[in-house]
Image (cartoon, rainbow, N blue to C red; front, side):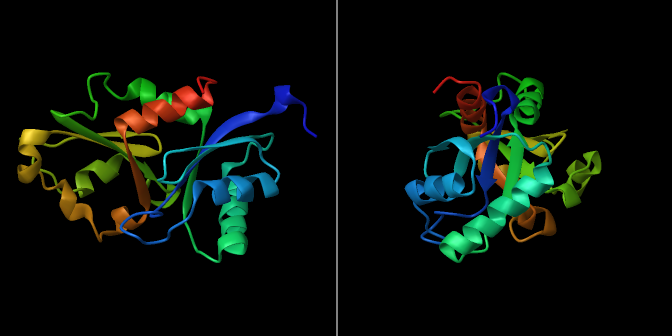
Length: 187
């Protein structure tokens, strides 16, 4: 067993599970799958595919491949996964404006990107309404913010079906910040 001091906190963000009755997976099953893969301190958060775990490996690409293969073997499902270390998630949360939240007046989504589409130029390729949509590229993510009263004027929902959409998984700002808190030991 790896000494606890060598363990790194990670979160695996699964794309497209438990949405509209598609790719239904229980968090209990995912937790068991991650434990079978040898990860430590495995915990899940809400039913949308957020799994916090610890491991000594530093190569996120290796971890991602291991997790995707493990889910396929365990559940016979091809599920894409983004893995972020606590430091990576902290960098996103620290650069996201504090007043960008998800509440009754505002919506803020963090769109976690796969490496093949992650670049600062991605923001210019996303259709927006500059009067209502606010986009910010942060390494590994694009953050979108809109006032709820202006949601109908936003062009961002037109991202559905695009190459960018197929290479991302989204969480709201509150969930993203909560995941960081959980990774930091605030369970």
